[in-house]
Length: 394
Image (cartoon, rainbow, N blue to C red; front, side):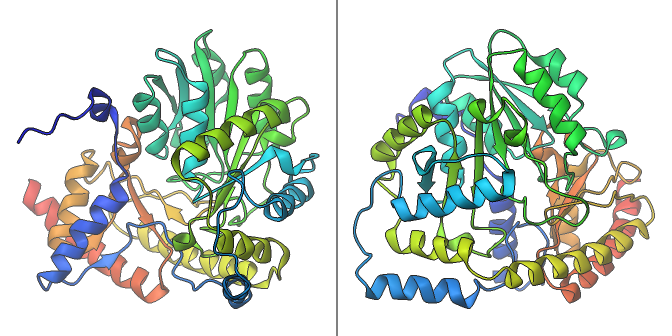
């Protein structure tokens, strides 16, 4: 029987990392050895004090609905952390707790973008920005991130893209997939470009604690920008809580009320016990986060050195997150074809740069959220398989 899908479903994209993971798992079931460098998930366990807080919450009866915006105590803990780290005043009524951080980007676009409105998205960039924009009837406008500029936003290019139809501008720093980090000068110049428009900014800062060089600079901290910024953050990356599904947004109070309305119509609320775990994460010891970032730094140094030692590959040093984004154009500008060959022939699961937009052509993305042993085995296979690939495509 024909499935009568709504036309809008044709505009909804996907996240290639999960597709490649599924293909890799299928190959493993067939007996093939796979090195997983495709998925952006820390391989660390959730810190003990966070798990204990969740267990206690369950035993104390936190198994019921919460307000759609989240428990006041959780929103207060978020407000205090954001106030301390971004140096801006935040009230709990400006915070919305969500099951994972993706709902914040989804709700922001659904709440602000009408049919024909434009959303400026970084390219390469996280594919869900463009996917949800199209789903809402909006028009994604790619903002190129170029290697020669360190994969950072060019404020002049951004200014040229802004039109009267621009409703939302998406920033992501530290950046997935490029590992780039915006400087203080960058966010100041970007803010100046944005303030000449009526657009809001969706500041995706989910990786802000995974930083190797310098400091994190949020556009929300620039004078005049808090009132037009939706700050997206969560617990998945820095606290190794991907499966807990807990995130949050900080935004103007009036928009937070609309976000809560969208929560009522979709998820009702984030789970109560995970919110208690989130409070423990925010207020607990920093040592587990610091140990994890130190280990990511070690892995980063191994994978970047290894990639740059492979003929035909060059890779810039990421300043944040846990992704390497090597340039492989000297091997093949068709990075999708190369990524497929690496998976099926070499047993190396990675992503084509085109999974993140047209400006990712000629690049691959490797996640180094895995052990050094796995990284080294992946590099060994990559070196061997690229030699086979060059012979095969001649």
